[in-house]
Image (cartoon, helix red, strand yellow):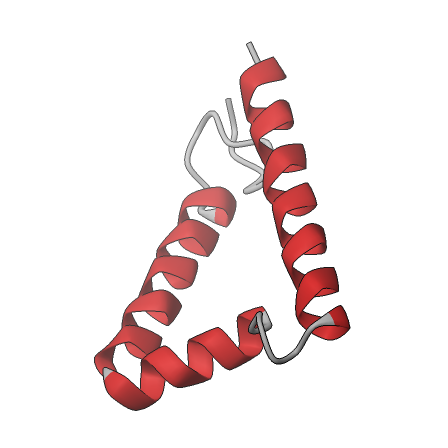
Length: 76
């Protein structure tokens, strides 16, 4: 059933939009996602590499040509 994943993705997008809007509206009180990543990366540089690793693993998972994967053009 795809409904929980669709709802979760929409909630994540809404969360991002709300907090980016607040960050642009009140830059003294909120950080943008980019500023947050840069701040965390300045404090703990390995975090940027780990975020990239996570994104790469997800990309491989989505597009790897395993049998039942329609995005990876699997034969199944």
